[in-house]
Amino acid sequence: MEEEQSDIDICRCPWLDTSKPDYVKYHDEEWGEPVYDDQKLFEFLTLESAQAGLSWYTILKRRQGYLDAFANFDINIVSKYDQVKVEELMLNSAIIRNRGKINAAINNAKLFIEIQQEFGSFSDYMWGFVGNKTIVNEYNELSDYASTSPESDAWSKDLKKRGFKFVGTTICYAHMQACGIVNDHSLGCYKRKQIIDKYQQG
Image (cartoon, rainbow, N blue to C red; front, side, top):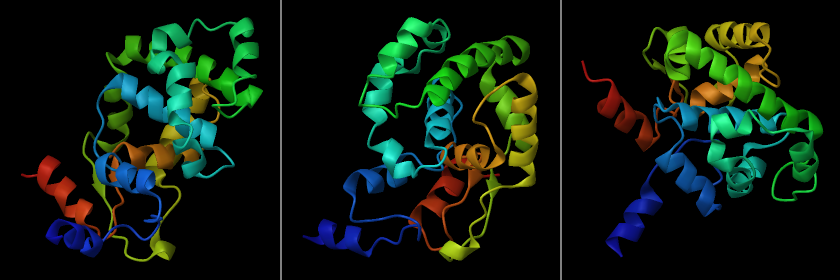
């Protein structure tokens, strides 16, 4: 009973709908945790691109569908998807059936590999836009939150220059939030300090 009470008392970010257990789980276990694994970074980039014009929760509910449809986000496999595969995915109700977004995922996988070859890893490339250190913001109310930043502007511009699709600065900023490139947990959220203590001591 004490554990249940303590969970109720936990303060979380103002954007989170705590009535949705899967959303709470995502907030508590993933959002804002620094990610350095390329396959996971490709997963988030693909999901964030699919989100364009939609809510993140809409995509989160279809995450397993995307994992199945995109070979657990194996970059090498996805980069080889052809138009026959695109037509198959267009019939897959477990994902967002948007031809542009599906083609973008395949296109971005190919370019993702090029970045890996150039920089050694996509992680090294991406984290370079913040000097390899998480930016910690100080937000309190929902109205405080930014949707872009100078860093997301620069990263979006570079991705577009390389040929990536569905990578506007808002999508890039959402990706940076999800992958811990920025720590946007609110000042009152218990995860904010937890992440700082875990990754940014010294």
